[in-house]
Length: 397
Image (cartoon, rainbow, N blue to C red; front, top):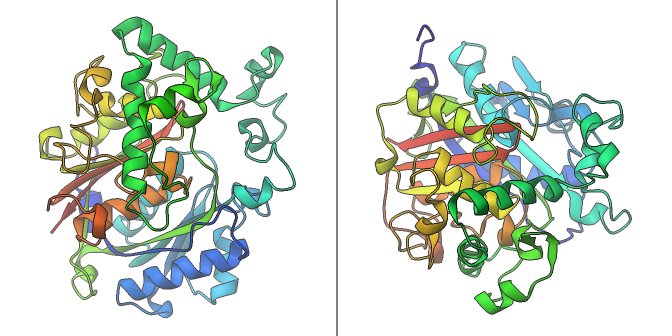
């Protein structure tokens, strides 16, 4: 390979912050954002004037929309930031694109400390518009867009209509069962019970799961993430500058953002999707192996996506995801591979990507309280599904 695979290793996470997670919140989107960003800057031991880069996903394109109510341009003015680089855009490797883009900006020498944030207010918006969180509302001009022109004629109105097809295909190809898939939701709920910010903390049983109504067979209501109002912020720092920050740096060991298939939900491998390309790129940029991972924060916009990430990342063999999670012991907090330790998006709340990075750092810094796993130095974060996928390998120095 001709690319310099060491560039992201010169970037570290030095601080994290998160606002309240409301369903809904009484705070404005901007107040939630400022709360998270101030907390992250203070956590890193930095000051506002130290921040010389800022990025979010999907950025200012959807300003005022519940999916992206605050972008970098708006926040620069509100917080009085003076930055040398800023970025944001809808395309790219999904919800953690801000981490990858911010790390690239630092590695390129454009800035020293980048504020990465993600704000979402779908819960409060749904009080006045029940379709606010529909996937079709996130693409402007959907009937004529490259993406949606293939789906709207067939009345595909929600992401779950697409995800259900992949789940059914996985069931058919590999014998995965609903009882096995249920362990993603059950594990997330058990972890959420220990997270005081989580939206849903009430105990969840297999009977509860099986009694939940189908939304799009074979996926049930409990296979879908829960909307909330929240903001999450992460501080990225140049590695040598990170040494002067308050926390032990968490190095960005490797990133994955590849897409070697057509940009669409119906990709070549219906049981792998873009996750397998992003994962393969990430592992090609590090000497670490899947066996080194101590915790995994894997996208659970729908439960089947977590299963596909487990396989794509090599955390279990291809086609063995159902059997790997069966019974839930392996993926529990005290298991060999704890996943979605804050409750994920299925129970913790749809913080949409950056919440996974926040939780991974909480675990690596051993700040997770009652949900803290055994001490470990390597964690993986993966976000997105379908045509958008990105992964990051984090190592505590």
